[in-house]
Length: 209
Image (spheres, one colour):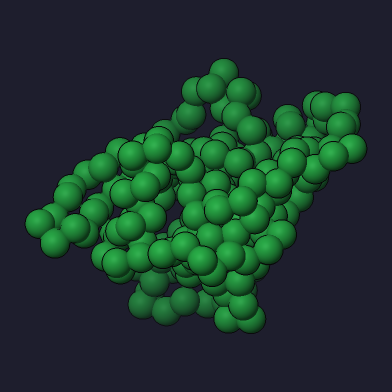
């Protein structure tokens, strides 16, 4: 199978990980990125957010489209909201443009049969987390139609966890991973609730079951 590579794809190395469907607010102030965003706006094209971790630039990032320009300032700075669209892998860096760019391959999931059990478990864990965090019961039909990316995009996870989701080429695997992440988040919320209740009752937090 021939792999389609895209050259001159704008890259935005940042200290964050974006996921498909996630809304990411950005403040554009460096000249090179002002140039990059101006081109993307003119051409209605995507750019890629890539996590610049402590150990270097991760090879897999998330393409983004500009969902909304919130503010343009006289000096060219821009506040905008980007929306993640699809994962990609950097095959080569390019240095000839006015901003970081690369040759990239957009990544598709491998063929697989849907895993109904994994989906049900993920949707149930997500609904439980939303209810515990917001005291509101989410719409069951809406939750049932959400992908792993769509659920994860609404929850604050650590960068390694989000990158792990982005690296997976299987929706079933992503559903299993978000289920573990949601359940861990529920336990943390439950611990905070219990700790706060104990603190209110006697001014001390006892780390016992």
